[in-house]
Image (cartoon, rainbow, N blue to C red; front, side, top):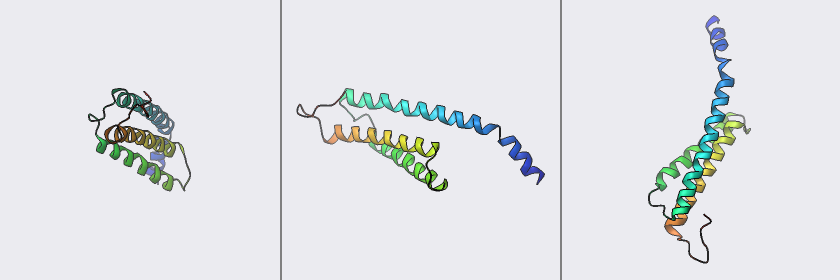
Length: 113
């Protein structure tokens, strides 16, 4: 009993710090997707980007968002939203790679970057 109370007292002050670190680093991760998207669209070539890797990242982020949603009583919280947004960004990269590999743009439907 004494050990559980002692552990709870040690853990409580760390939670706001961990929440802030989670927000900071996941915010930076979301921004970090943008140069990859821009590079894919600007170069018009997607061969140097692994479709398998980005599909894996998409699946990992999507399933993590769904798992957190279920664990949180089917409520959306910050962790669910961040993982869902990361999945969307990975999906945008997957779509860009697939577009350039299999549906090469032409003058009637140019790239946007």
